[in-house]
Image 1 (cartoon, rainbow, N blue to C red):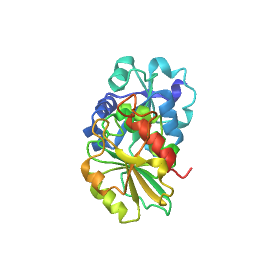
Image 2 (image 1 turned 180 degrees about the horizontal axis):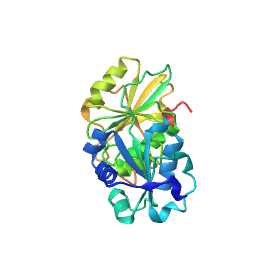
Image 3 (image 1 turned 90 degrees about the vertical axis):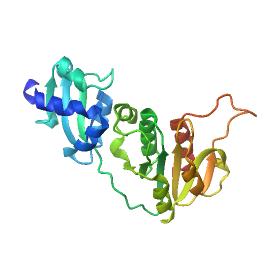
Image 4 (image 1 turned 90 degrees about the horizontal axis):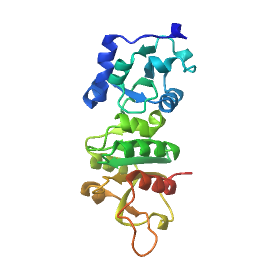
Amino acid sequence: MPHLSQPLSKAMLTRFSKLGQKKYRDQEGLFIAEGLRTVRELIDSLPEPEMLVALIFDEGAYESMRWFSGFRGKIFRADRDAFARLAQTTNSQGVLGVFKKQVAERFVPGTRSLIVALDDVQDPGNVGTIIRTAAWFGADAVICGEGTADLYNAKAVRSSAGSIYAVRYHPVKDLAAELERLQGEGFMVAAASLDGQDYRSYGQWPERRILVIGNEANGIGQPVLDLADRLVLIPHAGERPNVESLNASVSAAILLAGLSFV
């Protein structure tokens, strides 16, 4: 279907190749997603059609694709060298999409609301996986404090597996201040901590709840711990654990299963 596509221009190549850097993603309000599954899931969950800016195919992969015919005017072919300049992962499958980022804005929570907050979670793979898990359990938003990896990093986008538009993303400069503000709106803050109490031991949870997940090595920072209403712990088997701790995204999944409204 060559008539549906057009060659990627040098200007577009130059513009899009810069999106590997956060400062340019922030300036442009764009990000790149790679891989057939991730791109298709993002397209299926687009809030608005214009959130898709471009579909770019490696010339070798273009002819095997048959699902993109509804995006006339946004489909581009790139030779292998040009495509390699755009790809940020080793398994892009010859297809990538350029999408508009969510508009970061505060949301109006309902009577029942679940929020996930990330305090200095530095691994983009963890961030992307937590975003997808939060979407699965019906979280309203994910709040990211300073130091947390950018959701639009290539690894985070891939780990989110197309779920970026499924939950609100709200980066903040001062996570503790934002959590304190939400406490004023009736939210209970539960912070994951090895010094906490078994999350299953709480009989009742307020209708408005926030789960905080901390840094992979150091946990949650003291300013957030100081304001938390509850410190929650995932218990281990036996008298002593066989490992030091759980992965941040695994911890988030277990605790979200316990705190969600499912």
